[in-house]
Image (cartoon, rainbow over all chains, first blue to last red; front, side, top):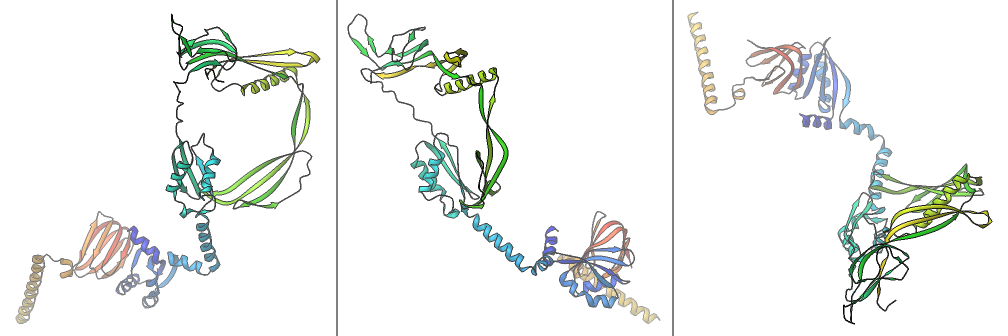
Length: 397
Length: 105
């Protein structure tokens, strides 16, 4: 039934109201002349509503005259009427065709390249590799052989264990998985000592191989041998030379000083801003609105908006708004407490850069010292526990 | 009078005989009766859906009553909200709350 209705819709039909005294006769004659009627609904006052195909409707006039019925169109339905409505609007149809064609053309290029899944390998490196292969924004989508690209990437770039290239919409997505780095092979036949990298107090020492020279609680200096690679053999003058290995955890201290400033220089935005808008097409900028910026001090913020349909269908059009904020330099007094906290925090942040990642921070001490000239300093001492051992060839550097 | 009567009877019996042979033949050959014997075929689905095949025309059409002319007489359908869903030269489909179907000679 659904199919029939769809068919009727495609062919087009009219809903008509027939009024007259011989409605039965009207229907019978219609049937005799092979006119298909459906949804014939009888109404009061000798009226009847029915649906009839366009073809049938054209044959209706003589029948209506014969039976003395009047026929009125209530509604026209179906595809032919819709097409007819738009037949007059030629430019509209042309426009829509051009639009579809243009849309198809625009979306058959690769407009963005996205790399996901990489942590160590730089995204730019992968993009550069792709560019060398000729894959960059603007390439025709259908010429991109994802399989061979994936293969070349995996061959060209070290450290990738799996590469998958998908073209979705106008986006070329490179999914990569990084392999686990090859473990460092310890050259056991190379005789080595384990020496301290920095000063500290030994917290624990675990010797895997070699001769232990320091014990827990010892203070060691940078360069001091912790585990020796030369093992004296008991009751003999001879030595056995090995590659010393072990874990030496030690307490280490890091210190930094920072002046406590009572005056803070701050940039305060005045609220004045100016926008320069440029249109970006095919990654070329066309300035639309270019005004002179006559602020004394200004901050520039670029807001980029590339038009895209959904997440994957990125179009090569966009806007860049360069927003300039005017600011003035304000010097403000701060309370001593605030200034102290600020200085301590700054000092701490600076220290963090020197502390290796593996180190565990145990304690942070902040003291304020008055040095000469009445300048107050924030002194931050960070205590860490870290492995200070490093192998050093015997007799080498 | 008697002659006429006899003639009449003869005609009747002849017709009966003819019809029965035709009927027997169709039954024997398992042909669709409604086509060979030109009889209407009515299909009722519950009381809301009625299909009449091989009809001749409609005599009366109203919301409460529809009369259909067939070779076997008139079929009268009464009920509420009756309407013709589809009508072609072969079949007629009636939708609505059908209360009764009568065959009138």
